[in-house]
Length: 241
Ligand SMILES: [Fe+2]
Image (cartoon, rainbow, N blue to C red):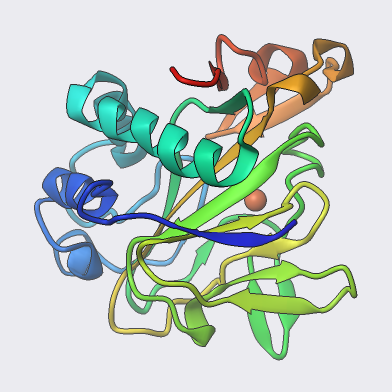
């Protein structure tokens, strides 16, 4: 069931973590790093300031930063497991993030037009993502969301609904088989910064359902059964750990 979870932004201060990395307010990343249009292939976050492959640098920092690891693990336990799954679960090893600089157009996937607005709308189960159908999606904005820059999600009635939630809230939805995505163009004068990740009930994880189909992640191709594993993509979380 779709749901909105809440968390304490002081205790789980993802915004501060990213602001320390970028050395500026997330809303004003574009002032330091540029507002060029881009098509996502895994590394092209704002490019004017050359600091290398920003996405890889952030993932490397997340992996090695003890404070981040501690915050991320307790967030998954206290918010995602306690408020949603309430039983053993698996979660994406590290969260993904999307940055759309103020005024820029960023294509993250195929495009779909709703009410005259272009969205990077896709289903995670479709080619070339091939995410397993057991996943539940979690999306949380770190900057202000209003209707014009909200993610849309297809409802059971086939209509699209903008998810206007605040920093401190997490939208739970089913992106595997429902079209969803951000608007291509950020018309606001602040950068849009959001986090997303996927989780599942541990009881639903079944390696027999993974195949050799090739999936694309951050610009690389993998056999599905070598990617959605407990070694690469998921981490298991049991109760009381
Ligand atoms: Fe997605």
